[in-house]
Amino acid sequence: MQDTTTIATESQRRIGLGARLAAASTGALLLLGACSTPERAELADPPTPMAPAETTETPEDEPTPSEPSTTEAPETGTAPAAPTRAISQVPVLTVVDAPGSTTVVAELDDRTSFGSARVLLVDQVADGWVRVQLPVRPNGSTGWVRSDQVRLEALAHLLTVDLAARELTLWVDGEMDRVIEAAVGSAENPTPTGSFFVVDKLDTANGGGAYGPYAFGLSAHSDTLTEFAGGDGQIGIHGTNDPSSLGQAVSHGCVRLPNDSISLLATELPLGTPVVIS
Image 1 (cartoon, rainbow, N blue to C red):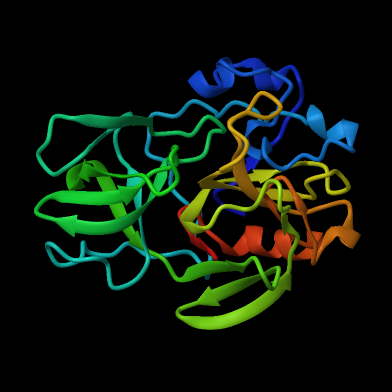
Image 2 (image 1 turned 120 degrees about the vertical axis):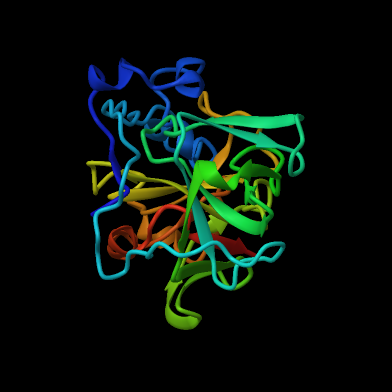
């Protein structure tokens, strides 16, 4: 499986995790900081993903039948005809507020703090610049990066989450592929709505744990939890060891799926996959 970081041991997780991990409690799984439930004490201090291996090359995805293929940039000044991801090609990607501007809105390392390749979702391409969605607060933040600092790839997959129906739907090339029962955020801590994307894919190495065998970290953040278990309330999609919660509004904002479903999605979806929550 490509694009996946494995959660490792205590001794592994203390090395080179980047600014966000270094500033947080070492025992917290920051990615799922909005997902834990207070009635389950064991969820307050889950394991932290291991540091990424050092590399001098731009990370590449292993080819699979569902893997997106490289595509030419869309016509200048237009939105992509299909969902498109931008993969950073530089050590630090500088994001500005407008094409040609010197006002920096974000600086993003080429790896996330969990070791995944830095991948962003494209909104628009215009005259050597690409507008991208950002995995930062507030939700819906965007900025512009130089087109020569990213590689654009078309995406075939899309996830939609219907909070009222408590269902997640996978779309492939514009066609509905499957509908999966899900648990969503509670009334007190609802799952945020909007257009997001997959930032990280994690192998939890514990299929029977609270997060199931795999977890997707999204660009979304909780609207009610600014800090939880040492993290910043980042929203995830993950498995569960409590199947009875599926179909319910019970989480702190994350979307829970059956373990067999999240395992299958982990083999199919690349980083950058759009996730529309409504």
